[in-house]
Structures are given as C-alpha cells and as structure tokens.
Length: 301
Image (cartoon, rainbow, N blue to C red; front, side, top):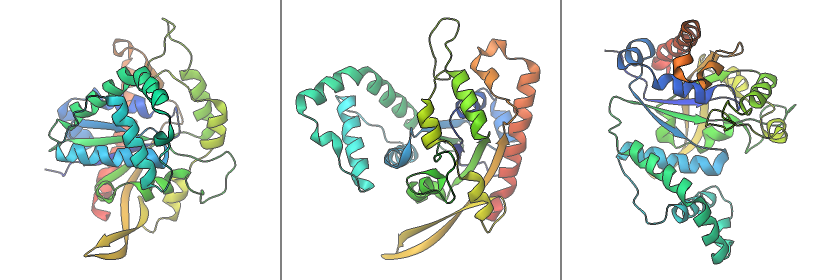
C-alpha cells in the first residue's frame, strides 16, 4: 500500500481558499482520501499568524503526536502564558507579563468562552490517535505589495520554515492554494459580505485592506520553488543540534500548487446541500492533480 501523506502545510494568501479546501477535504470518504489523495482522515491545526504563533503551532503539533491534552481551570490565562512563552522563544518581550493584573483579569473574563472553546477543540484533536491520519496545518504568509525577494523576516514563507519544528519539516509536504494577490484582495472583500442572516461564519470574514497590502501584497512561494535545487520541492536550511553539535541540515519539502486562479472554492461557503455536481467535480479534479504531484515527490526528500 502506498505510504500516506503524513503532514500537509496548507499555505496561501488570505481568502485564497485554504479554509474552503479544509472543509472540502473533511467531506471526503476514507476511500477517497486514501485512493485518490494519498491521505488518511485529517486532523487539522491552524496557526493564526507569524513567528510567535508558529511556536504555539509547534507545541500543538507535538501534543497531537504525543496524544497529550491540557487540563486547566482558566483557559484564557493559559493562553496568555503560552503567548508570553512563545514571545520569549523568538527573542521578543513577554508583553502579557506587563499588563496590570486587574486589566489582565478583565480581558481573561471577556475572552474566556472563546479561549475555552479553542482549548477544547485542541484537546479533542490531540485526543485522537494520529496513526494512519494526515495532519493538515493551515497558515498564510506574505510581504508588502511590491516587495523584492527574498522577503525580509518576519515576512514570507521562508521565515515560517525557519521557525517550524524540524519534526514538522521532516514529515511535511506543502499544498499551496494558488491565486494572485489582486484576486486574493478581491476574494477577501467578497467573503466579508454578510450572508442571508446578516452574520459572518468562519468562512465569511475579511482582513483590513491596509493589512492585505502591507503584509499580504505578495508572497514568496514561487520564489522559494524557483530557488530550490530539487524540482518540486522547497529547500529549508536549518541549524540543528545533533549529538551535542550544531549542524546545518537541509530539509526538502515536496510542494504542489492547487491552481485556484479560476475560482474553484467559493461555492464551499454555501451550505453543502447547495453544492453543484459540476462545482464538486472541478474542485475534486483540481485537488487530485495537486495531490498526485505531492505523492510523486515523496521519494525525493
């Protein structure tokens, strides 16, 4: 039996179709996952944004692999402590430690329900045996509109690869949802429009335009693919500790583009009962082509 894809880094600019792709993958049968996409049932993680939160993602990934869950009385305070620890890991100040206690408690009370929901969701994910499953990690990275390459840290995917745990890099493949920045901005506005009930869902939200231009006006995925010395792979050079010594190690991550420049994903924001067979087939075929590329590249690590 063909080895299943272990970990997928689902990357793209905002509004390019990452969340819709995750939703679509979650609707596939086990046979479809295995036979047509080379995946097991998916376990999904979302890093939010930038280097500090990649450190949280590294922790979540390690917990999922180990099957560890977190039991705390106060989910918001736990989140604050994790954020401070992650800031320190990337050489930044632990800002939550400077917040006066009364203000910190008021903020904790305000976000307690959301923090508990997210912690419960993470615990449910980490409580599942990852054997035979595929971990899908979603993230967006970019740089300012008109930036030259290589992008300067903390911008771009190159920086993300410098912070992702080697345990992720040695197992992961990259699925890039491909749209150009102008299309990303258009879809970002479109997905922020309220639905029939006037309320936004997780698939119906938008990023402010100043952020879209200042942080996601371009990205370096194409540049990284062009610079790699192995076709179909992204190369990430990292300094690692092996046998007590610092060494440079090159990680080669198989990478494929899911071409969404002609919008294949927006229909997924509708209730599933309204999905049309032609829309489902176009999405299925486009994804299958990208996954075929990833499966073929597994032997070139």
